[in-house]
Image (cartoon, rainbow over all chains, first blue to last red; front, side, top):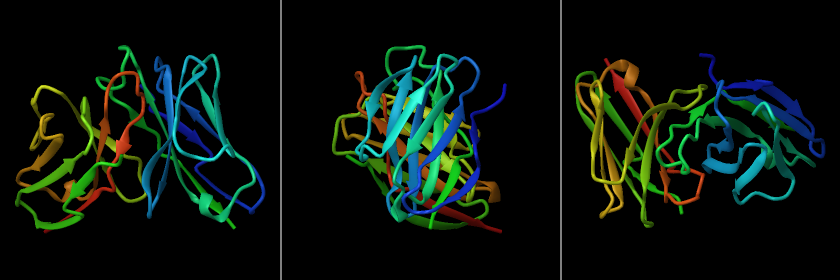
Length: 117
Length: 111
C-alpha cells in the first residue's frame, strides 16, 4: 500500500507570494490533516478534513486554508507568505473508521519543506 | 494545551534503557507515540487508549495512566536505530479530531 504522498517536497517562495501544497492520502483513508513543524514551535495542527468537510481547525491565521476533493486528496494554501511561514508542512491521513480520532492511527507523509525568503 | 515531555534529550549507549514521559494538564482519551529521524516524516509507534493498558512493539513499550493524565514510553536494550526525536500526541476524545503534540525528546544512541 502506498503511503501518504506530498508534493512538492521542497520549494522556495518570496515573501508576499502564495503557495499551494498537495497531499494524496493512503488509499481508502478519508481523513486528511495538516501540521506545521518548526524548530521553535514543534508540530502544530493546522486543520483536518473528512469527506470534503473541514472538521477541525487549529490556531492559524486565515492566510492558511485548505480543501479536500472527492477522491480524498487535499491541498493547503498559504497566501501572502511571511518569513515565519518557513517550515516543514506535514500531511497525515487516517482511516477514521470510528467516530473519533482517538482509536485511529494517523500516518504522516514525508512533508513539504517551504522556505520563504 | 500542549503535553509536556521529559526529558528534553537523552544520550544512551547501545544496549541501555530509557524512559520518556508525556504529561497533560487535560483529561486524555488517547496518547499516540511517534519517532522522527532528521529530515524524515514522523513514524507511528503505537496508540494507547484510556484504560491504563500497556502496549509493546518489539523492545519498545508504553503505558497510559488516564487518572494521572500521563504516558510513558519504555525503550529497552536500545539500538542505534532508535535514535531520533520522540513525540507524544494527545487527544481529549469526543469529536475532537486533532492531535496536540509535545515538543519532543531527542534520543541519541551511541555505539
